[in-house]
Image 1 (cartoon, one colour):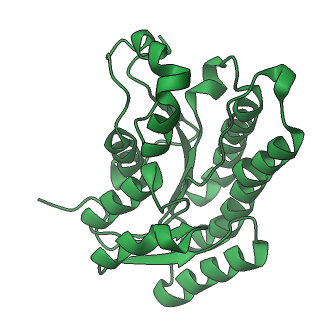
Image 2: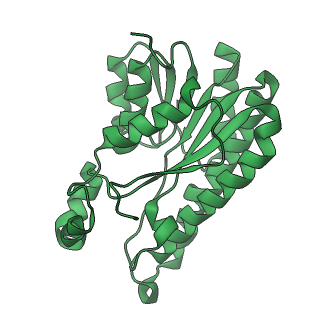
Amino acid sequence: MKKLLKDKVCIVTGAGRGIGRTIAETFAQEGAIVYALDIREEDLKWADDYASVHGMMVDICDFAAVKNVVMTVKKEHGRIDALVNNAGLISYEMMSMIDYDKFRKMIEVNVVALIHIMQLVARVMGRQQAGSIINMASMVAVKGAAGQLSYAATKGAVISATKSAAKELAQNHIRVNAIAPGMVGTERFKAVLQDKFSQKINDIPFGRLADPDDIANAALYLASDMSSYVTGQVLGVDGAAII
């Protein structure tokens, strides 16, 4: 079977665990050369199991460090075919209880850092006149969620940035899309599920949480040539919860 990402050079942020790790592993299994970025070095030990995965400890809010990573990838391979902006922070708090220090940090990680790495990678992709950028949004940005106003606001910004970048970069044949997961059964999510969200599974027509593989498969589609004419889209992966 033909591997969908054979020899493609990909960067995945927030790849230490959960959705990001699953995306990075899926890309590697499909033939990609993957640079797996995460702020926690200990969470990148899994990368040692793959010859084509390079685990790199990077704080995406450190602009100099991120620029060095992009320059390193460009120097080693001459190109960047796909970027998955998965790294992010999340909060669960009512509007009356918003922690503004936490909110500012979420904006820095979820929005500012995402736009910065898009900017750097787009310069490389522009020279090669090809590439796919995939941003991780959320269904809470599409339909809202009580108790997640601040988080939803940052992911709404991700969607707006995705659509604007798609229009701006289309002339260089760079595709920019977003994935909007619903509730995903990662270890981190399951840790809060019982107390905060167990009753909400009843609102999902599919009757289950999404698996990280469901999100990774959507990212695979958007990174591969199968989506060569798709840009500016927000792909919901939510088990019909938004319908």
